[in-house]
Amino acid sequence: MATISIQENKTLRTGPLIAAATLIGVGMGGFIDGIVLHQILQWHQMLTAKLPPDTVINKEVNMFWDGIFHAFTWLTTAAGILLLWRLVYNRKAVLSNRIFGGGLLFGWGLFNVVEGVIDHHLLVLHNVREISSNPAAWNYGFLVLSLLMLGAGWYLIQQGRRRSNI
Image (cartoon, rainbow, N blue to C red; front, top):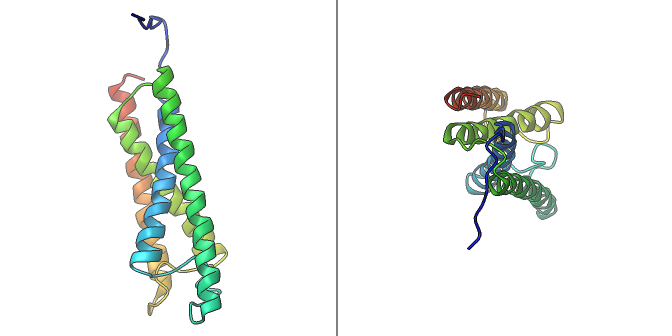
C-alpha cells in the first residue's frame, strides 16, 4: 500500500487557484455570452453591426465567427481546467471556495470588460442589443455590470485570502 508524504515546510499559495479560476471564468463568461445573447435571445452575433443578418451569406459569416468565438471560449476553459487539475494534483495551492468563486466571477467580469470595450466600443463589431432604440445604453450598461462583477470577484478573492491567512 502506497502512502503520500506531504512536506511540512511546503508553502501554499493562492495565485495558482486564482489563475485557474480566472481562466475558467473567462471561458464560462464567453459561453454564457455566446449561448444566451447570441443563440437563445439572438440579440447579436459576432459581426452584426458590420454584417446585419439580413441575407443568408451574412448569417453564415456571422455564424462562422460565432464558432471561432466559441472555440476560443472552449480553449480558455480547457486551459483553466488543466491549471486547476495541476494545482490540485500537485497540492501547490490553497483550496478555497471563496477564492475559486471570486476567481470565476473575476474572470467572467474580465471577459465582459475586454469583449465589451473591444467589440462594442473600439471595433464596433456588434452591440449588446442590436435591435434597440438606444444600443449605446445597452453597451454601457453591459460595461457597468461587468465592472461590478470584476469588483465582486476581487472582493471574494481578497476575503478568501484573509480567511486562508495568506
